[in-house]
Each structure stands twice: as C-alpha cells, then as structure tokens.
Length: 124
Image 1 (tube, rainbow, N blue to C red):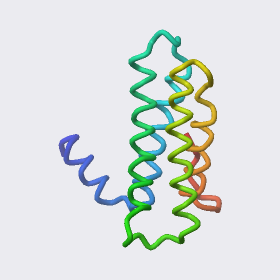
Image 2 (image 1 turned 30 degrees about the horizontal axis):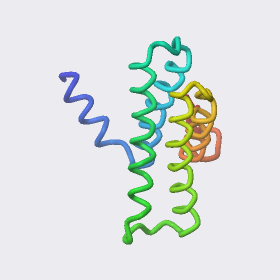
Image 3 (image 1 turned 90 degrees about the vertical axis):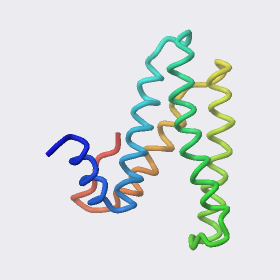
Image 4 (image 1 turned 180 degrees about the horizontal axis):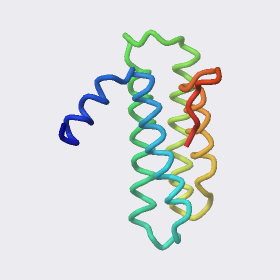
C-alpha cells in the first residue's frame, strides 16, 4: 500500500472529533516550535501564527453559520477565542507577548476533544 493510500485510509477512518484533535495537535506543535525560534526568524513564526489564526477563523466562521447546532453560548465562546487569538498573534509579532497563551488554549481544546477516561489521547 502506498503512503498516500495509507493516509487516505487513515483519514477516512477518523471521526470528525479525531480529525479536529489531530489538526489542533499539528498546529500546536508548530506554535511550540515557533516559540523556540529566535524572534528574528520572522517567516517561521508568522507561518505558525497564521496557521493557528486560520484554524480559529474557520471555527469562528462555522459558529456564525445559522445551521450550526451548537449552543449559542459555546458558539460565542469560540468566536471570542478566535478574536483573542487574532489580537494575541499580532502582539507576539510586535514582540509584546509570547506563544504560551495560544499553546495553552489549543491544549485545553485538545483535552476537551480527547474526552475523559483512561483512553484519552495526550495533548501535544
């Protein structure tokens, strides 16, 4: 089986929740790596921040969809976090803050996606 066929099969076997968890893990690892880079490595830092921003923007856009069945409170919280992520990302790029808050937020979301119990996945 080719690598691409394996990736396709693995993706099809994942639930939406597992796919979200995997995506958050990838983005969070990129943020963690960017946090270790010299601030002068602007391109790599921007790439990680932009990926995270796009993830949260997509979530906020999904919450704005009138067909979204999540509770109004949860949708409002996700949109609020998305706005925070945008502001905080800008502050990081200006050198006024660090990556930790963004990493912590993503890890908390991952813990929620993993769910309770002994079989829960470990956050990035």
